[in-house]
Structures are given as structure tokens and as C-alpha cells.
Length: 120
Image (cartoon, rainbow, N blue to C red; front, side, top):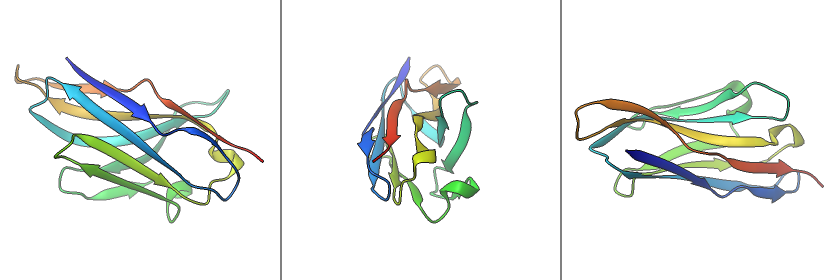
């Protein structure tokens, strides 16, 4: 089994910054694509950003120019640097990863999420 654990959420004022982390552990041979999603209260989960093993990234429009996704494969950690946060960024942020395990299977893993609240 592989586990993903997010951290770094919290309360921040509008215009502030947060850096989220997602640490992977367990049965990991290789981590392929990784993504951040978020779910605001009463809303459906939505895509935020994606990064490939080679470092290619793409973002949802609201995240472009404000958020940066990155990964450290030596530590099996995914990051999301969020700048110029707005109240509408308030949500639970979850990471997702396709993980190749020793069984030869690639599993689609999710973390439990970390809450981000943007408010004055």
C-alpha cells in the first residue's frame, strides 16, 4: 500500500501565501503523474494543477500565475506554492498520484486533504 499525507494548510489573509506538501510513503517503486485538487464547501472537487515525472506542468486557469506545483522525487514529496490567495481559494486541497508498486500495478492514490481558509 502507498499513502499520501498532505500538510501546510491553515488560515491566511487575502493576498497571503501558503505552501502545501504531500508526502508519499509505503510501497513505491515510482511515482508517475501527480496532481492537486480542491473542494470548496458545497462544491464539487476541481482540478488545480498537474506535474509529470519529467516536470511538465499544467494548471487550471484560476491557478495560473499564482500557484506553482513542484515535486521532489528524492523525498517522494509533491508541493503546491500558493501566492496571492483569495477568499475563493478556500477549500480542502488534496493530492493525487499514480504510484507504481512492487506488485507491478499502478495505483491511483489520494490523500485525506488539508484545509485552506482565506479570510481576513
